[in-house]
Length: 184
Image 1: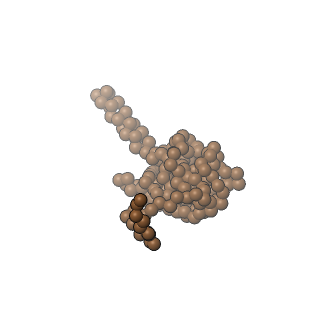
Image 2: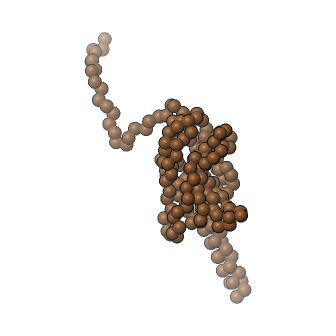
Image 3: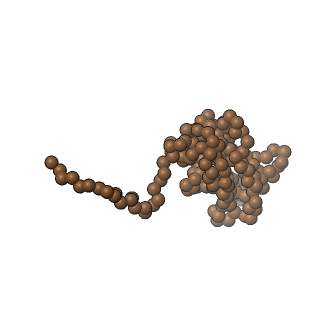
């Protein structure tokens, strides 16, 4: 009987550990604007949860306005901050304040993977940076004296050389004023 009770206890603890390992917040999975480095939303180690830089950063122009997307996977009171990090994953000189702060306004329970989705408009700084990251910080205020934080990063590049991706299904323009020359 005692063995059965212990098995049930450790089974419940294991289920709790698995469900709590899902995490709390991250850049929106599948986002075309701000894809996460890592799909985990439970990264507690600053600045980017230990997730390695990607080899395919999104490219933007310095000073460009964009709408970033992120999601809360486990509901907590608090707020979110977005920072611009440089190549060494520290805030760029002169940009230590958040680009935007968003209050956590969705307090309904998260059920069946229907995460709380957020969009925030930001103006990227007017600087050049080949290996920058947008850092999302979720600040949970359940214990105001010791708020917990979760981190997620999305790699970006700030450059004038931004490639424009063709629209899906768009046809290339027809060539005009072509002269056909006979081959020799």
